[in-house]
Image 1 (cartoon, rainbow, N blue to C red):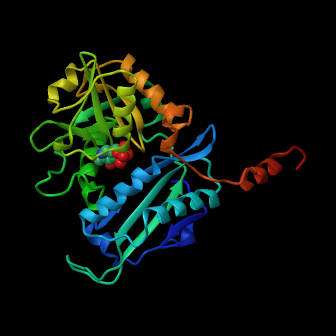
Image 2 (image 1 turned 135 degrees about the horizontal axis):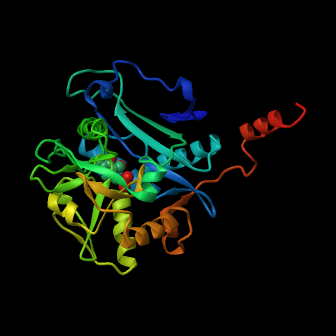
Image 3 (image 1 turned 180 degrees about the horizontal axis):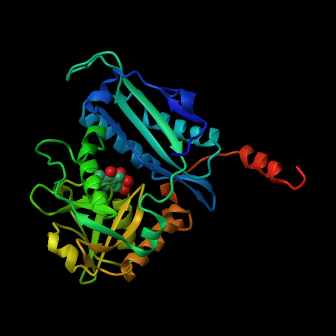
Length: 323
Ligand SMILES: Cc1ncc(COP(=O)(O)O)c(C=O)c1O
């Protein structure tokens, strides 16, 4: 991964290489952490964080579901993130806040171990690749079922829960596919290993409901609104596995991956991205990059120094002829 200059840890800006934790941190052993994946885009009005408050609200809710009290308010975390982006001189980046039980007590009920909080930002391109975004990816239904609400909390974005996603992703990668699609415990379609899923059937846009063990994705919510605003009928209902093969179009969406068409599921071809996927995708990109005034409130502007980043200036001087 590409390094940045600073990481924010418990209220301090720390040099990237000094952002360390104790090996007996509770979260390292038991997965007791909650996190977010957020993106900052270089929009037409300058850098801006997409749906910043919604992501931080979800972080606070995920923490609450695991009885973790984050010792910073949403506003404090938002301000820290904006300053971190600015101090690192980024115009666009991926943002990873994490709140976890730190060092101090072991055992499963470690109420006295502190809740540590960090935020990191770094440059991260399209998670499933630019070619995947343009032409679609190959997906495989995983043999692993998505975590059940009977044993864990699908609505929480919690560190330990991601072992389930990692098993599914690893299986699909080792079998030569770009992404895994998980079914829920009942056998209905749930989501990708790190993305929500949509299908188009008979011109209608369909996505699995909250009762299908999904993460309540912020891209999913945005896309539901955009699709409805564009005049499409959107329904949240259970999706049978075979509907993935029968669908006119299938796409995934998430902060890291953004909107990614699916061109093949379980070796059933769906073809190049369809018309409805492309239509929604274009509007979604407009929203991300500040080109859609109707969604301007989704963007949280970041103040940055307009001077060129120092590093680029140094490189240019070094490369100048005669030096
Ligand atoms: C399991 C899972 N589902 C769905 C999503 C998509 O959520 P969002 O659009 O909020 O990034 C993510 C990514 O955070 C995820 O990890």
